[in-house]
Length: 202
Image (cartoon, rainbow, N blue to C red):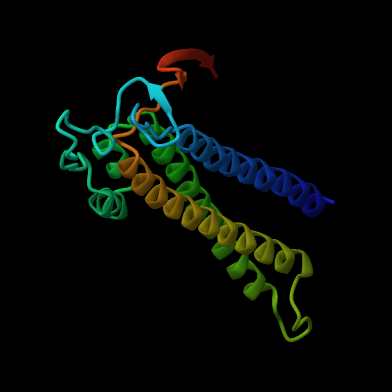
């Protein structure tokens, strides 16, 4: 009965952790997908977006394109996050993501250490329970040993997913650093050399 309660409790904790990670990844993806490419007013389709124009879309009055240089280097951000998780987000100035990454990382590290200690404890108890009269040992101790080993392995998987998400997010942040990500966008259409404006807010 004790094992069943612990198993159900652990299952709920695993589901909660998985949902939290999925929400974090989904929020990061939605945040990035809101970035809008800014088109020049003289684009062939006659459509432009008002706001902060991206450097690669701005053209000089003479008609020649300006040279665009990214302010952030994506692979440098990845390298920072690979060495210290959250450092790439610091480099990209997305400061709010740092406590999220560090908090989840700390929680997963605690889960790994705590469950590994319990696994080692029940492993030793199970080995001590094996005797000549009972070579298979105490089955309850065996179940607890396997349970905490699985828990430890799950937290290792969660940590690997978080680490990978940290690298991907750092790369995307650096790529989109120069783009306008305002929630308010004004859309204008060229018609008879006059502008028809449409305001849209998310």
